Image (cartoon, rainbow, N blue to C red; front, side, top):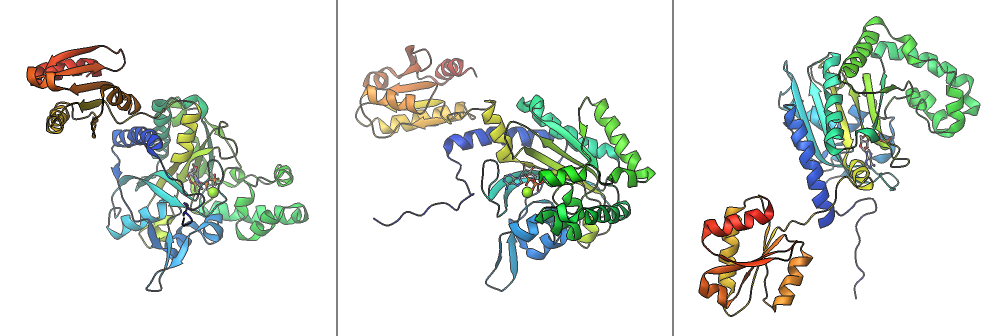
Length: 426
Ligand code: ATP
Ligand code: MG
């Protein structure tokens, strides 16, 4: 026998019982962004590599270590998208969506990062992304945070997620702060771990969210970014906090929150949970006012977030907030010669009467016991059974699979439909 080929490590198949859960969650996500008046974008999964190195930053984990980069047949360097913001900005610029106008956009789809696969961390994962362009006030920051908070409410997990907030100021403020931080880190250089040593001179802010215990201890005495902010940045942050409080959204301020990508300024936030172990960040985002210009557009205010679907769904299934379900509601079967055409006609009748129900036709015949076993297996709610007697009487045997009750019901369209509707609670 030939050796079987397996999926790539960290890239998951979603099987029928997974997809039924994913579809329910995706429905809530779609309904929520729609209820805020946001429009969907669909960007390609592959982009020119330099889009990501320019947008995300050369010295970030994502660009340095995690990208799937390859040369295509024309010799161009392309990469599978590791996140959606860069591609969304590229597309918005390319099609003049954000030239002197505001846009509230969202997208959903797979992202790719070559990381060490573990629970909640995969090489292909999915994000819901929201990006808003052309608005600068803290009110829009509050709006997208409120949108995520609405999601948790609808999914029943508000009490499982904590909102952490920080501000990174503007680029001038950050520059002066970085100089001070580097001086501080240099003074403690010998006690830093290898990653932090390297980052001290490439991306010092990232040292702030080091997971190394010794580094964490050292950082307790590090200068705080907040002390380097001017009035405007402070006012933005304070107004955001007031708006969130007025919406009843609780938060904690985490001065160490800097986020992994280079492009953030002012507001940054993360929603974290303790229910998933180390991979506890379900959603993260913030303001990125410099990115559009950095990618060749006219300076444009921007704010957004990325929400990891695998982590969200892991949380929901761990807490038993969603369960797999069957796509079949109505099971149609029959016994006897030339019954197939009657079954097919009955299926068609049911599908036009119940547009949002799954109608499964049993193929291949069999005895009564076998038919009902199949109906059970697909978890149908009702079985419609045709036999010679039913054909003669122009009726159908209708079996409520939850109660076991069955009755011979007239085939007449309205009679049959309303009988089945009652069982389905339609
Ligand atoms: P982390 O600190 O966990 O590596 P990140 O800061 O790299 O996360 P972002 O780039 O902000 O993550 O992406 C937004 C969200 O996408 C994360 O909060 C997380 O829910 C999800 N995510 C990121 N990387 C992965 C991954 N490799 N597998 C699954 N989900 C991921
Ligand atoms: Mg990461």
